[in-house]
Image 1: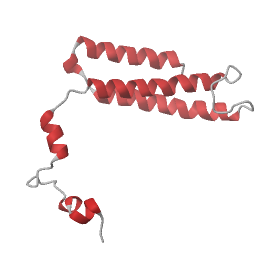
Image 2: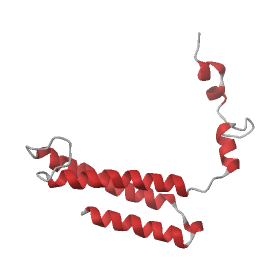
Image 3: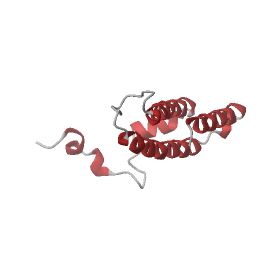
Amino acid sequence: MKAEYYIDSFKELKEKVKEDENNFDEREFYFLIEEIEAENHYLFEQAEKHPKYNFEPTQEVPESITLDALEKLVIKIKKFIKKSQPFDPEEELDRMFPDRHNEDFDEDSMSYDSVFGGD
């Protein structure tokens, strides 16, 4: 597919989030990233077959230009996801200081040897 399709899809998802910030579902963005990365794999294979391909986008290898644009788009999408995720102080504290009384707490991962290494 053309890069414009993915760019338009990203714009649509961004508009959807702007209209209703509570409607943010990062899975939709990650699904788009997966689609783009699958396309990147195909484009890389096509560009790699070209005798003048040298891992830089050039007019001589049109696939390389599309590949470069899609790689930059993936970076933009990931930045947007990170910026748009609501900050949850409780979740952040749970991540930093796990509750030892939770069922899924892993005592071994918090042991001295696990954190600082064995002697």
